Amino acid sequence: MFERHLRGRPPLFWAGVVFAAVVVVGLWIALRPSTTPRAALPLPVVASTAAIGEMPVIYTALGTVTPLASVTVRTQVSGQLVAIGFTEGQEVKAGDFLAQIDPRPFQAALDQAEGQLERDQAQLAGARVDLARYGVLIKQDSIAKQTYDDQTATVRQLEGTVKLDQAAVETARVNLSYCHIVAPAAGRVGLRQIDPGNYVTPSDTNGLVLLNQMQPISVLFSLPQEDLEAVLTGVHGGAKLPVAAYDSTGNTKLADGTLASVDNTINTSTGTFQLRASFPNADEKLFPNQFVNAHITVDTLKNVVVIPSAAIQRGAPGTFVYVVGSDDAVSVQPVTLGPSAGETVAILKGLKAGDSVVVDGADKLKNGAKVTLRSPSAAASTPPAAAAPARP
Image (cartoon, rainbow, N blue to C red; front, top):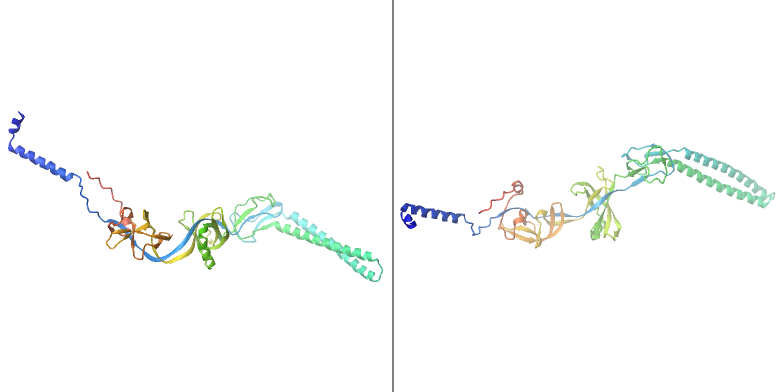
């Protein structure tokens, strides 16, 4: 029955069936995934040319800003604090008035010592007159020799007493001068530790105020003992090694100075040696006990190959760069790195001046890959490409 039904179809029906089958097969062939590899397209990269230049050899270490003079101002005598002669945070010069202790007890002690001195000096003068008189009489054999000897001893005893009195007077004067407290050095005073009206003594822990010299100021930092030879070579050669102080992030330069001294001992616990750098600190950007990054330049390499640090790659060959050849194909070139400064690094071995190295776009490269060069400005302005939809 089914066969009879098919036999009854007109020829046009069968032509339509054949046409539909051809269309379906053609669509399947057109839309199926291709297994034939396409030719690889050149990858866009940014390149830079290796050049001959100078490269400073810089050692970096964490340092602490340390005043060249840091003095806790204390009283030398005990007494009542009657006056303060400074404001907190004030810049002072050496000899400026800072504080006053009640001077009356010390003035009284000075007057007493001076009175004792004058009395004993008068006794000494009388004893010397008697000794001169006894000297005449002993020559005339009018007095006993013992009397003359006793008077000589009395004069010497009074001379010793006068010396003691003079020392007592000097001590009283010094104590009186201690009542007037002055700045021992130039610098900036901090917060006062005691107020007028209090009784102060030399044993007070915090003293009256802390005085720090701000200009010039120093930075203490340590370097590994392996760097000692390079530092001493520059120092013994008479060079003033420059030192730059950066903030704790290492991005902002605070001040420029020079190496002032190198310690004479290596710390056996840490294997480091300590250095002191001096800074004029005219703008006072360096502050006592501030943590900074010290960058000391110990030497400058001249006529070396320099390239951007972005060109350096690390992988199985070690440290290498992608060199762009004349045929626009890249090759892997191992290199030996030298010192770096900022975004530039010196190449001690592996490159020559004029070599073109890839600085951007190296993440998808491999040895022998074809590339097309683009300018750095175009690379920075080109937005990231959207992900292409997956093919069926």
